[in-house]
Length: 142
Image (cartoon, rainbow, N blue to C red; front, side):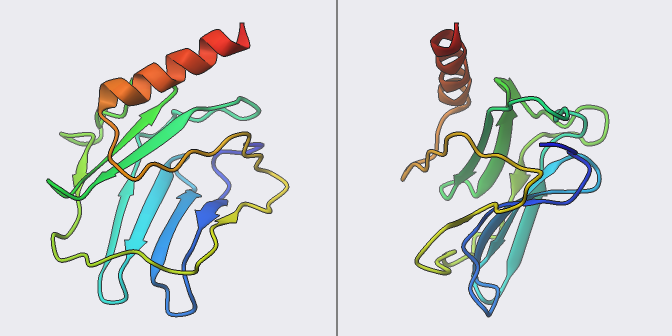
């Protein structure tokens, strides 16, 4: 990110009615996931000050439909809420049906954002798996 406090849409599959999901940065310097099923909207943001300008970041957003929990792991560190909130995880509505929006996922076309690699999983990752993926990527860069 050139400027983590400048709003950028990173990923988006929302349709004209707003149904789908979106991953975006916020003016607070966080990353926010938005889940919309056409009836309800659910949001959760990462901890503040985890994103640095001009730095490559490894971001994992886990949306687990079992316990209806969202977590963020940025650069191998679980966003635990810091001093701003009691927990780093957030719950989303158990009534959320699906986030099937457009058939194609749109990646950021913004010049201030460059997505190097994207992995989508059909299962929620454990925190340890997210951290391991970050560490494996670090070793590959050495």
